[in-house]
Length: 249
Image (cartoon, rainbow, N blue to C red; front, side, top):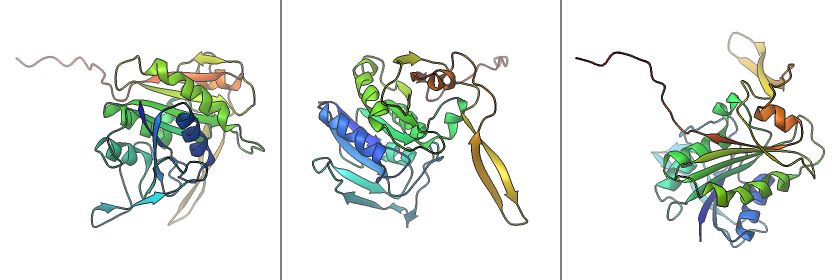
């Protein structure tokens, strides 16, 4: 039975996490949940933690409807959780790191900042398959179709596990009961929101998030998602660029 670590950056109480874990369990996977005790959005793959004397606090939890699934609240972000899970913090290292379902889309090159994506990439760097899963809820959602993102992610697992260990994919779904299907997509140059500086003083600054004014480039994840498609994008956890420096004599 394939073992899966389910994590997120919205915190262990987040409904998207619970739906994703439930569907993974119901599909027959061996699921362990380890998620931040508090909201950790925007943490990327950070391994910073709220520690005391070098010890990271971990608390066992029982989640409603998931009584049979081991669950842990960690005083650290999802990147750290994926890292310590690979070192055996929650039992044998999981074969898959399943991160989400995030409250909000993670598209474009702005995924660099996403804790949801950071956990999946950290899993990939440590030899697991990784999936980051997000729901495009917009700025003021009235309903949340968590299964619209969770179910396609679970369906993609068999294909992902035919690929080399360390492969990572990023999945985004519209917040709707139905969608147009699945599309592989490239990363948009930016995300679908931007961060702006709204206030600054001598000792503080304040940021806000708002929709981008421009339309996304056709064929990108942001564009397909806006058109009602579920998007899937393959990610390379860490790569290098050839600089062309001459070799030493």
